[in-house]
Structure formats: C-alpha cells, structure tokens
Length: 50
Image (cartoon, rainbow, N blue to C red; front, top):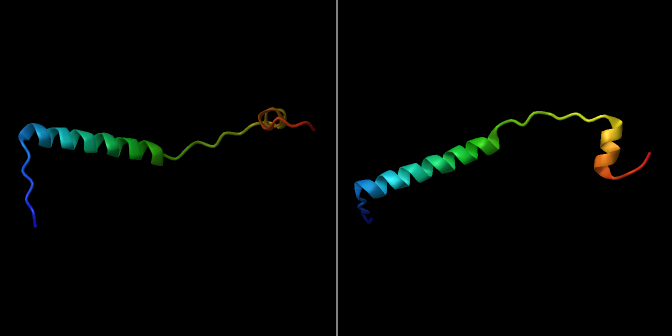
C-alpha cells in the first residue's frame, strides 16, 4: 500500500473541491416542483394543433 503525503494547502484545496462536488450533487438530487400547464400551453410547447 502506498502512502500519499499532502501539504496543508493541497489538503485544503482537495477538501474545498470535494465540497463543491458534493453541493452540485445535492443540487441535482433536490426534488423538482411539478409544473402544470393548461391545454393551450401544452399545444404550444409541443408545437401541435388541436
């Protein structure tokens, strides 16, 4: 098994980057609110006619 030695600055930078990654993952996993559209909006979004 290999040992990896980091300076204090490298360790701090690594922890900071891991925190940023964790925040991005948490943001992705947040429950999204349901969005409701009426019939007319749906037709426009799908670019279809009645």
